[in-house]
Length: 283
Image (tube, rainbow, N blue to C red):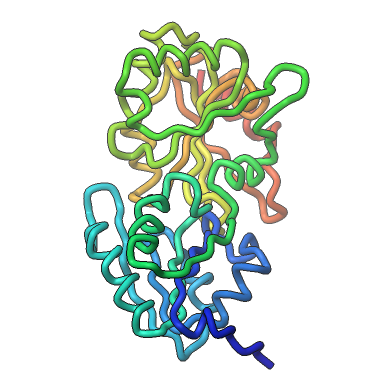
């Protein structure tokens, strides 16, 4: 039996939910509870079908996806729609991929709600870099050498000073992730090397992290080929993981000019021997 909404909630409320990177198994219990009680759901392009299937059949689903430069609705339109629906005393769920607090334009949307005197709540989700690392059985940090981890986007590399700072972090054995690299990401390896990063740093591209058709590609800054990354991605979400924390996964690849794709077994494990054999054959 559903718990009735409070008086505050019945006056209209927007709940921002992080849907995680894809798999519904990574949806938090809090997120699931709010999702099942939603009256209207505004969802992004990166929200998987299996997550949407958890919504009540009575809920109205409104697609407001934005991918690269292909926007179904502008940010201003989304802001206005949130206010319009909440003012109609609707319980509105704003469903975003990953974690709503990371590169999800949350600040703009909650500021708009604040300016209109509306109530909102933010529910945490699993962010893409954490899920991607876990899905390939790799840590983001290591107490022996990587006490820092940095999350970036393509625009982080536009300023030379910022790029030098990121290159320094990589050279200090910290890990770095790049969100949404399909547009402009091809410039990142070269910029990092020019900024002083060692060319042999591992670069791991994870496509459709946590989903059944996840693909993992390993290379190095020097050998990164974004034509192959885009070809493997085929437009699906991708995240880059760079630095020493991922060296074990990218063993030996960083020393050679070729690209490898790791296949995941039915048990969710990656075969190290199979990977090394394919690496040797590629020399």
